[in-house]
Length: 543
Image (cartoon, rainbow, N blue to C red; front, side):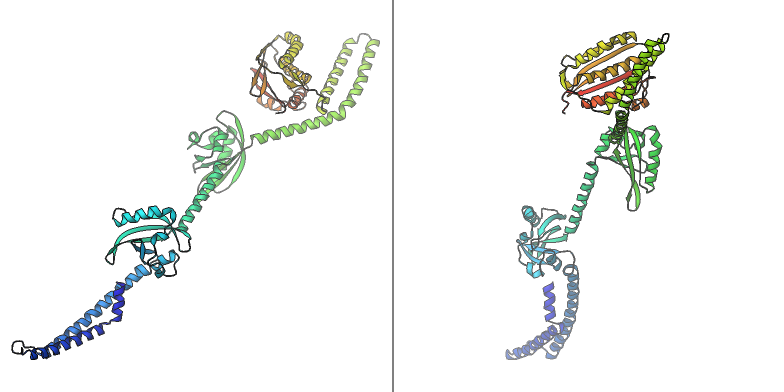
């Protein structure tokens, strides 16, 4: 069509009509001469005037027809140029493996300066090597009419070897009487790059959420859980399926539910706030959390709330240990500065009391009370000194069963007087342990004396010993009055005691000894049922 348009530009309607007029007139004149030469004028009669008039008339018709045809072709050519030449969509026609037509947009997408540069260019040289086999098979099937013309995405190579992503729709056509394939292309490189960037961001966000050590969960505007990461499952003990579409506040302890609801309502209004709360996990344990809630804003509209919770249980426990350590340090400093100053006057007082006891009669009862109280003060000073300064210890391999039996023999009389029976159950394969025998005896004495004194009406003390992994567990179970949870938290504090004449230093000293052995002491108790004390010692203190 484009070639015909160029031809018509060269031969205007006037020139065509003029040529027709000259040829027709010449034919009329020559035909008269020819008839005269052959003496056919009697048989055939032709009037030259009529013939010439006919030629002029048909020449005029021809002129008008050709002019109209030229206008139609010009209009068609403009449409062609608007639709194809000026189309922003690249168009490529290839046949027998070579490009036979490409529009300017196609030349631009493949890095050519002009369409002529790519005419007769092998089309497979533009296809990325990874797609060669696929492209060849697709072209063959298209030429045979056995494939859909649905668009596909594939990679191409520009003339400068830059890789581009292109969406291609292949259509079988007839071009200049021969079968060919027309490619309707669309450069989707930027779209693919944006898509890859979006996918990378989504993966980065997913990695941030899923691998975050803090619990992260998504709530809808009704406060129901839509999604949560693995850290949330670990902290709460629940799987995602168990908490899906449930409110997070139902995990809170009673006193914190209203606090969390207020925090959620503030976040649902666009505010970000945080607070400290406690939840009860699946196993029934209390977990301290630092909870922050932030609104989820999509298209300037609040669509939900993010919950971010950090497990503070270990940190609070560490803070409590540091506080206890500070108190221990204060007690130690006090002991170091005062103990020796107290002990010397005590020695003098005790000596004079004993001297007066020999000189005076009828006051023995009072002297005995005074001596007993002086001995009690001396005992407290001794405990102070244990806390105040490191003790010279000598670790040796000892049998824990023998250590316990020695202590039980020592306290057996006191137990009988209190109507308490001590039963032991020891595993047969208890190994020797590297320890300081006298210090461990002191710990066991403190534990058993507390148990006996707590059993006002008598009862039984069970002592169990077993090996658990790399540790030895010694469990003391009494049937005493028990201790409340609030008081258990205070045990080990200096000068805190549940006994009328206690000092609160016995358990503190015991904990210090156990820590020196790299072990631990755990106390559980119920009012009216009794107390269980677990003494845990490592088989190898160096670990």
